[in-house]
Image (cartoon, rainbow, N blue to C red):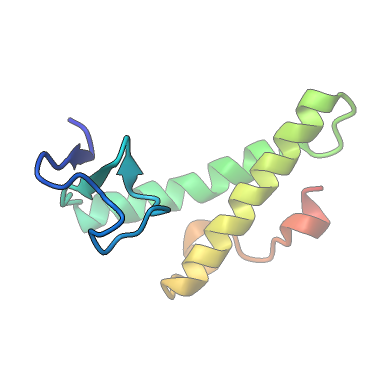
Length: 109
């Protein structure tokens, strides 16, 4: 199942209130996201596991010498940083995600 559908009634014209540069347009049509239901306990478990897994991979890639692994380390450090920023925005304790005490720029690059 796709997480979004394309409206058959909205053409996404510049006069639709969204504007020409709307990021939710595909081929001139507006994307409408379907409402998803997620079990809160499953989401908490997912996030609890995801943080340490991403951090572990980022740590493994740290100090790499070849260009690909350096790029991988940088990308994973960005993911850790983004997860920390989003946790702060949603008032989620970093310890609950296993990302407390980590400074991606200092520790992962």
